[in-house]
Amino acid sequence: MTTDLQLAPLGLDNFRFIRDLLQREAAIVIESGKEYLVETRLARVATRNGYASVNALIEQMRFGTGIHPNLISETVDALTTNETLFFRDANPFDALRDQIIPEFCAKRPGATLNIWSAASSTGQEAYSIAMLLAEHFPNLSTRIVGTDLSPTVIARARAGLYQQIEVNRGLPAKLLIKYFRQDGTNWQIADSIRQRVEFREMNLIRPWPVLPSCHVVLIRNVMIYFDIETRRQILRQLRQVLAPGGYLGLGGAETTVTVDPAFVPVPVGRATFYQL
Image (cartoon, rainbow, N blue to C red):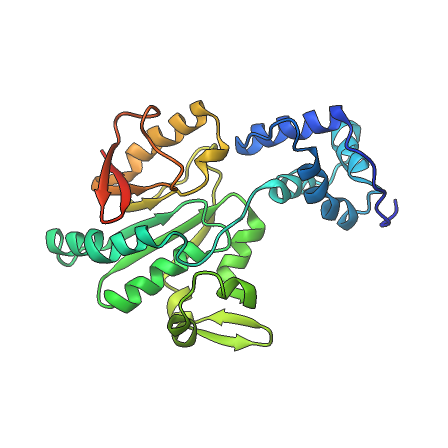
């Protein structure tokens, strides 16, 4: 096999194979017309594994024997969208700071606040929460769990090392100065923040591991990639995880309305959360 990637149009049968693989393994739907996306994202996988083209990579998974056990997971990983940034969409963080966390402290003094950042990607959301807590609720006992199906992004999240362009996106300068140190051209988050977050690999469409009863669950900008039945399945499972009176946060383009009527939209400041 060669490492010189040959550029060729993605075969229709190969695209269908990848579409079905991604839906089976991650419940993510890729529509027809997105062949270019598959080609672009799998080019590095093909090169890294010594295949002459993306078609050759896919055909090995379709017909080959002795496939490296990580090849399928590496392919799914490459096709998963990991777009994220610090304090993405500020309104939910303002709601946490101004209403949700003060309400928890008033109702349950001395209790531990459990927060789950689902589909946490490279960790910016979970670390944003940790910095918010350090700034405004330094004495509150908390447990923050971040999960994602991609082992690659979970490893990056645990490392807490970010490029300049990543800390430029959404992170206030005062928090960069206070909670990061420069490491060459990158920025390393402080241990005091990194140690507040526990990151785990977790696939939302597979059996869930044991999670704490969560007072806040953020599962933002991920269910838009799922079909309606997968969304219903995830929301059914969330009913078992969300603590009584807890808050569920979704992305701005997502809602439980028409998907699971057990969840009721609740305006919190300029954000919308959901409660049972």
